[in-house]
Length: 282
Image 1 (spheres, rainbow, N blue to C red):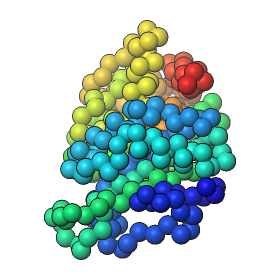
Image 2 (image 1 turned 90 degrees about the vertical axis):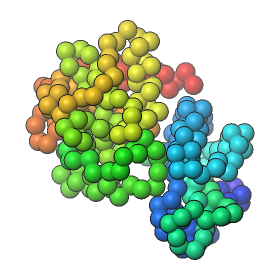
Image 3 (image 1 turned 180 degrees about the vertical axis):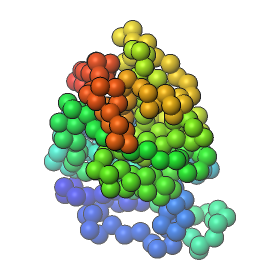
C-alpha cells in the first residue's frame, strides 16, 4: 500500500480516490460512529478497549458491527503497515450507509466503513512541561455523550472558542457540574486527591481516562469518581485533560485565572511519568 492509502468498504484506495456518496447517512444526518486509536511503534494502543468502545457506540445507535473483532484487527494491522511512520493516529468510521434521505432507518442498507491512518501529530513538548490554558462553556450537547458519534457540532463550537482565546481546550459544565472537554476528559485534584467525573451519559468513556485511574490505583494514589461541582473545578489545585491524542496534560489557566499556583502540579507530574512508562511496556 502507498503511504496515503485508506480502507473504504472492503477496498484499499489512494486517499485522493476514496469517494462516498452524497446520500451517505453520515454526510446527511451524522448517522454513524467513529473511533480514534493511537499507535506507538506500530502497536495499536489498548486496542481491546478501543474496539469495545466502538462496539458500545454501535450498539447505542442500533447499527450492527460490519466486521468481527478478527476482521477489524486484520484491517488495522494492514493500515498500520501501510504507513511509514512508527507512531500513528488511526481513524475508524462507520455510518449507516447510503440511502434516500429520511430520518427512519433504511432497510437492507450496507454500512459505510472507513479506516484511515495518519502520522501521529504530537503536541509541543513544552505543553507537557509547562501546561496549557483552557476556557469554559455550557455543555449544550445531547444526552448521549457516552456514545462516540459523528454529531460533533457543539464540540466544534466549544473547541473553536478555545482556539479563539489562544487555548487548547474548552471545559464544559452541565447544570453546574463538570462534564468533559470539547475533545478530552477532564480531571481535577484537590488536597492530593484526584477527582474524576462519573462515567454516565454526560461523559464519553475515555480509554485514557480509564488508564489514568488504573495507574492511580496501582500506585496507591487517592482518587474519587463522582460529580464535580463547577466551584470545585475553579478552586482545584490541579486540572488535567486526557485524550488519546494529547495523553495527559496539565491545565494551568482556566478562563484567564491560574489553576493552583499556575504551574503543573506534583500529582500531574507523577501521573504523566507513569503514563509514559506504561507506553514503553506495550
